[in-house]
Length: 265
Image (cartoon, rainbow, N blue to C red; front, top):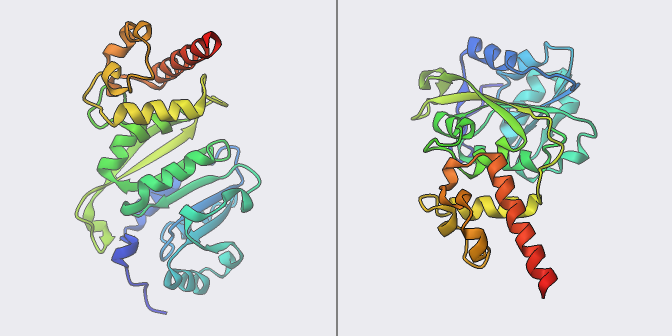
């Protein structure tokens, strides 16, 4: 069978440098997991190296039917573990009942969505190694105070330690993208759950970054903050200046205020 055609609508840019493919796979530590899921394997440039590692079992999920056919023909040992599906629509707990790691050359157009999906299953996914657009990779790993630090940075850093590993140039892909790529590794931290109401935490972070240039006092809707709470100096800061622990603290303050108001009514 001939090579798979890269499809623009799927954001496919096939890695052709085998040394980089090996380096990406070697970045996966796979500690305390015996299963690994590769997202978007394409023609299996990462898959071939993953299959050589017998310390874990590799599965792949691929939405492109042409790629699925290619993988079936070239990796017969993988056939029972090729999931022909859209990763973003998968119920991961129906395929994995134990912790598993994720790896992949993520399509640029859905890389952020992939990480939001990971967040839904963060207690089941202890590690992710992904190659994505360099600017997005840098944003996810950015510390508080950085201009690129944002909503997804906070959400992921609440549950993972994130390392920017290395940059990959455009010319090692077919077709070459217009931007550089970056490889990052996310390793689950020791936190079983946040030190606050998680649903409220998500709402507070989203609301704050929707007006990221404003102070927290001004970016959070007035009905959320009492006059007494607004006086707290933490609300003088802009959202990009706050780490996960500070967002947790703000969430607790808001929850405590709501509880006080409720008890007084």
